[in-house]
Amino acid sequence: MKYITAGESHGPQLTAIIEGMPSGMPLSAEDINEELARRQKGYGRGRRMQIEKDRVEILSGVRHGLTIGSPITLVVNNDDWKHWTHIMGVEPLAEGESEEVKRKISRPRPGHADLNGAIKYGHRDMRNVLERSSARETTARVAAGAAAKKLLALVGVKLASHVVEIGGVKSECDMQEYSLSELQELSEQSPVRCIDPIAEKKMMDLIDETKQNGDSIGGVVEVIVEGMPIGVGSYVQYDRKLDALLAGAVMSINAFKGVEFGIGFEAARKPGSEVHDEILWNKEEGYTRKTNRLGGFEGGMTNGMPIVVRGVMKPIPTLYKPLQSVDIETKETFSASIERSDSCAVPAAAVVMENVVAWELANALVGQFYSDRMDVLTKEINTHREFARDF
Image (tube, rainbow, N blue to C red; front, side, top):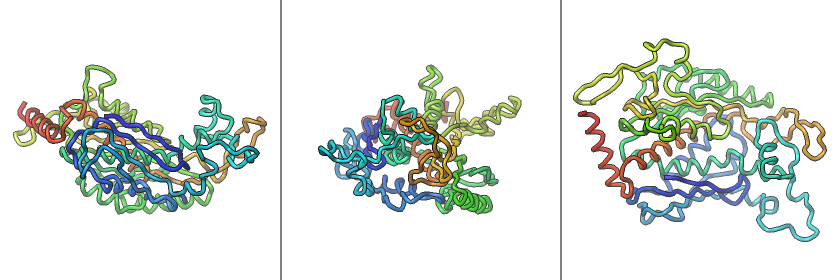
């Protein structure tokens, strides 16, 4: 499978086109709207989330509630477009019309794509960069991921996400005490998607304090996946290692600067006997592991244990106490301007990461098993599970 997204932050719409989804899979707008709504929640979000009420339109590839094998077009309209039609319009400006209507930006903001993108594409007006590099683009990615989540659910693969750290405040909950459904339920109930009520309160207080100081904070989010068959991915070539593909996908999310699986970087501080997972077998489950320190992967392939992947999100670079920068026209220093922004988007980023991970897992299944028809794909995956159990 593959997808491409299009659209600017303040343009008329965001679009995702999905190719390769199996035929005969149930898919509705509500499947996608549920994920879009989750993305818009979270303590610390800015005013943009009060303006936009993201709802999807499915414009192709689905007939009477079932995918038909052709490309699926998903569109989310930007409600704020009505205030930007002149600034972001497609048509040339009329003769004699003021150039200022475009709200030209020549002052790059530290931490954004503004300056690098302007140099790459030769834009003297950096609005051409920031409109597309905006995290608003993740709306379309979540829409595509929601379709992938539906596929995964139909073949018995479930995901949950939660926040484990914001601004140095860490959740102290033992994850082994919670089922995946409990984790998801508790996470959904929390304004910061943290299941530790003590840490939750501290996180919210810190977000409030940070906002008052005109600053921003980042954090760490975790996605857990259960039900992936053993042996998805491959050790044969570097570009078929599923954990590597997941790592790249997570790092592609706006503001993400790190990723780890299982105990992650902690493995560098432990002996091998405290890192690798001993293999067990029983008739009911087949092969399992005594521990899950490697986060469900060995040799670039799933090993049947839950996938545990974490991503690190840096603080949002749009600050209300702006940092120093340089005007590309005058070369004079200035205090960077601000666009409407969040003080903390970590809770929303957890939802984005969950859907990005879902896409890569669904894509791996579609690539490894027959996938033109959903019923055959489901049958093949179940047959493989039985083979692995009895191997």
